[in-house]
Length: 372
Image 1 (tube, one colour):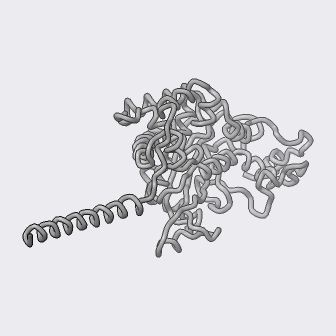
Image 2 (cartoon, helix red, strand yellow; image 1 turned 60 degrees about the vertical axis):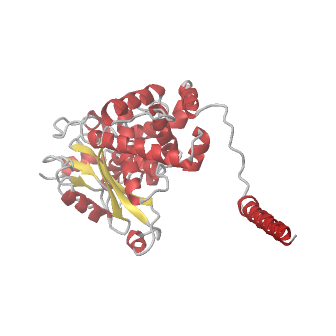
Image 3 (cartoon, helix red, strand yellow; image 1 turned 180 degrees about the vertical axis):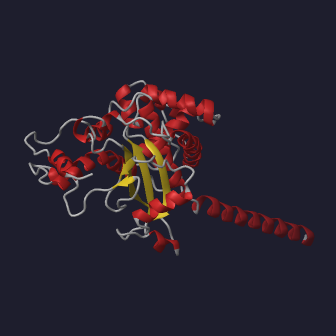
């Protein structure tokens, strides 16, 4: 009887230990673990959504900021020359669409994950895969068509800009892009707006194509210092103006050989000449024509500023180059017939008289009265 009772007590103790172990496991793995929401059930795949957007021209332009034929041409170039590839669950077309969707908004990775039906890690991976390919495309197409600028552009060989801007080959300007940095580097990137930014210097020709970009200098640097840095650091890539040719710049850069700035202490910006406030002096008329030609790069600068999602400095620099590469690719493949911003940039720099016809011909008077 003693042996049997000891065995019963031993078995009861094992049962109690097992029950206690089960209760602890249940509490840790069921009670303490948050209840996850059920996975979203999608009625279509991400690739099916892309094909649906491409099937409607207006939806394609509104979503990807380009026409269907331009999207397909860009996709083919990236696949054939730059290594854009498909994987088991994401096609190359969908990979390109993910990048365009995020940048054109800009949209967050979470928004793209909901739209395309993938995890945020997959969206991030495919975004960077497409970014590297489009960045490499930018290295090849962000440059002048004619590095010697041998022929004057038709825009400045007649009309209101001739002969004063006959030797103009483009415009140069800079802008600031918001950046998230922490620690000691934060003070280096804080500029005049008291927020951390980095500089972007862009050069465009008279066809509104980007031909040079320098990005990444701290926002505390002055525009002139950024230009000098680009001339020294990238002297093998900067499209220097030939002798007697020049770029249009604002007053922050000053008048130096190859760079023409407006007159100081005279009205310059186009809004100063609106509502009947026509130029009254030779300097103001010169500044008005100068601003007309140069405002194309100023408008594109605003477009670039709105096209940068929230990333680190290195990724942001690549996104800027990629956006400019996309702009040049669209310009080289049929232009941008559906958007207002390209139409505005072209109209702002046209050859037609856009001020009142009764204005005095101050340029002609100055040319007749000026000595050699």
